[in-house]
Length: 240
Image 1 (tube, one colour):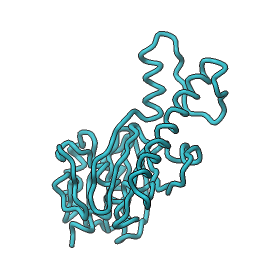
Image 2 (image 1 turned 90 degrees about the horizontal axis):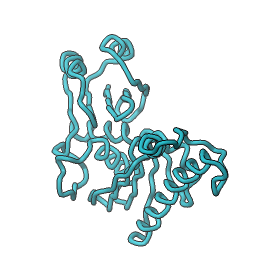
Image 3 (image 1 turned 30 degrees about the vertical axis):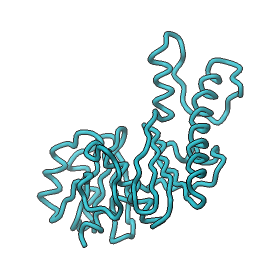
């Protein structure tokens, strides 16, 4: 079986696959070797892959390398089923690579725009079998926190379904500004992608993807696990 570890900016997500069959997914902000071992006690892990956008705790390497025969650390130098056309591949986040791999696996040979609405809002451009690069901007929660932190009196609020548009009070003005701004941004990216590709797919993922998916003007495929699915795909691809 395969162990997938996706260490993000906010949470760490774990998954266990039997081939392409996803057996379990769990996440944690804080965990220990004991907690991880308990979660994995019923699985015989033969391969593992780690994607990390921050420093990886040493004990994870120790735990994995002692108990698992094959451990793969995802980088831009990993064997991939698509070409990376990026000027600085060494700076490319492994989570972004994994999302593109997941998109390639779901829609092989197609033009795909992958939108990850997480801590950051990222847009990845996959043209058939070439990753053309992507863009990064602040995600929903980062925008809310920035307005609160860098101003003297604006309150800290979070995403909500109920707000006036235009805002009739300060909280609604912030909600309408941030949420509408993000959805306008996403819609414009899709519209621009559509200009270049008559046939294309859009994948939406990330922690805020479920909240945003019904606010977008275009049809999207919502795949909340596209990163871990992509990591498993890369692990299997490198094992061939």
